[in-house]
Length: 428
Image (cartoon, rainbow, N blue to C red):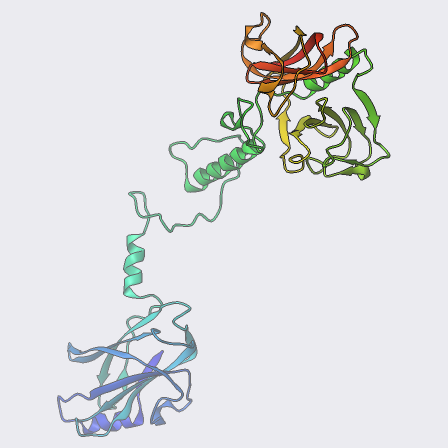
């Protein structure tokens, strides 16, 4: 931006006594531009006032220091014109003394965009022609405070503050879990870190951590896998048990490929069900089950039942236990299949009852019991046990039910006599 005396400024210089200086009164900024700036009486289309900082005489020349900043400026504009007003004496009338113009201009943003500050140092030297030679020493779009802050954050070989330093590009890495090395550049270092995080994310997806595995059969955490569980082993075991029941009460097989099977229906008969059409499956234990085998077991009084679901789609077994009142509200549990984590075996025990027993309201009221932990084939690492049925020794008919509580099976039969009890052990 070039500065010069206006016509009135030249006139006032001629009127000043030797050694006298004009009194600077105010400075204004504008976005206007005039082709005849010398004749201007005031700044056109004023946008803001500028702050006068210092007026001094150095080596016989007048220095005027002032600042333009955008604090409180609500609307940005193109700075093309600066007017400096002055008067000859305190009683004199104020005139437009010096005018500065730049036809191209420089944009001053609104304060909500960015804080900016222009710093000006005008040296005015007048001669007999009353023309002014003006020098602008500085013009900045950053405040002094910002510049000092940037200097403090400068990073070099000896150190510096990198808290706001941006890395424009990461080095591409192909090695798995790369390790940072001494002497790595920022580009290489952050490329390794990025690749390491990506590798860790890929590894973590689907990982079942040791701490997530439930190592008991009493937890009600339905979202955690059971360590003492297996899928195919249980499926093979139930298939074998089915074939071993050579009596009229064998578990029957049902084909529901063309019939509706509702998992919320408590009244299904004991047996193995083949579900061969997803369109006939209602209220499954998990979404996405299209085909499955279902094992239903219940006691002789039909007041409790268990359901085991073996989907074709995966090796997760779903199971639910309940009675007519609680069946729908009881959650489905999951057994994660892993033959390396569980062992099973089936044992038979003989028991003689002398009278018909009455179950009452709990297993403890059943007529006979077998303490499993006292049996010679009770497995080490016992986890749980399931009573598969109570059978009359003479006919092989299923005439009773057994309930396992802790390490004891309680037995309820329809009549006195000799029976054998099948127990399925789970152990580690």
